[in-house]
Length: 495
Image 1 (cartoon, rainbow, N blue to C red):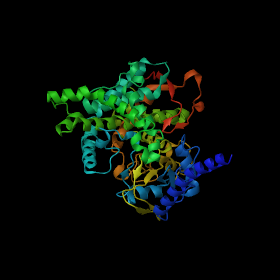
Image 2: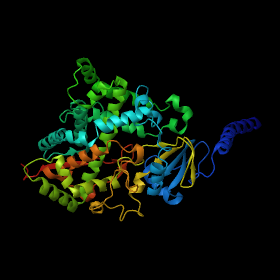
Image 3: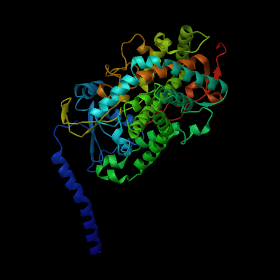
Image 4: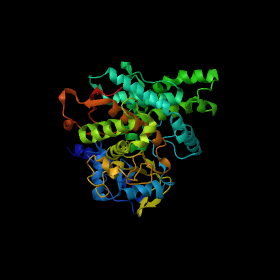
């Protein structure tokens, strides 16, 4: 018996002593005057039961207790969360240079991709060069205006497909996702990448399925991010699964890139031509194409799905949008991008959707490249920073009736998403602002206007719009937990 007690005591000491040791070391090395936050256990970190499933809700709730800037521990890693517009301005403007480093999850640190990434890179010379190319060759006003006809044609193809589906139950996000992928495919290399009639495009074998799988993998909590010492082991297999998905994505356009290089024909004037003429290597092209097709298509699809769900739940608002579109466009032609400037209420509906359902709830995580003082607190070098756009968009101190879908708040309002109004930053702000926001907002409005103009929408099995499940599902993009299923009916007045 004594031997058993001694053994148990020895094991207990072997377990406790490392924890005590590391706790003392961490305390000695920790800077003073850190932001407040909930208690954290040594090595384990902050224990929040709801954090895994709904972190945006849990951290929004915690901010009401601990303030606009709070500190949590994810394992042994410190994480500072900014939850108000004042805190966001400090992170994204006042200290933008120091706090614009990028925290990259281990699941995206894939050999052959990560070293050429722009999304996950720090603000290096390569990052600046690639961002400049994106800005001038993809997202400048001149280029967007020149490519408007392509986007209109692809949206027209979506409308014709929906006419064939009249009266049938349609999974809304799938067909919108396909349209956005084809818009990007046409701009990038003059090819469609999604076939509405090919059922394989609806599962993991198609590009849409692979993109969704990558988004899911990137959002899964990774032990290597909590305990960097595990980084090289890929204990959960997330990096391996992501690498396999990235490899399949690369294969989907490898033949196009290979043939374009071999032909030497650069007369197509698409983005692939630009990259080849500027001597980008195949791995560099693969990384850039992945980041063009990936997060942007997923977040834009999610925004359109949320907008349609909100409009269907508010029939009076939907009727106002339809009347505006029909008045401006008329009944005898399709919506053009040149019409969008004359559709302020539609624009207000998109803005309100982005406020209530931000595309990325915490933006992508920043990292402090140096120790600095933020709101009189110390943010240590290497610390991860998260900006809670979900909390900022629903802050009752800023927004009247913050949980209500009320597009009127943006009518005749100068509040915009260009990163200057820090109480409304669905696309971020500062040097890390989403480079594709101009394209995204055009595509979202063009598709949404076309959908409400050409069709009347109902829910399956006579479901009342008030019964729609509006719960969200946390991920890199804030998705509807229950996908929107709809039944399109062609507007009888349409040509």
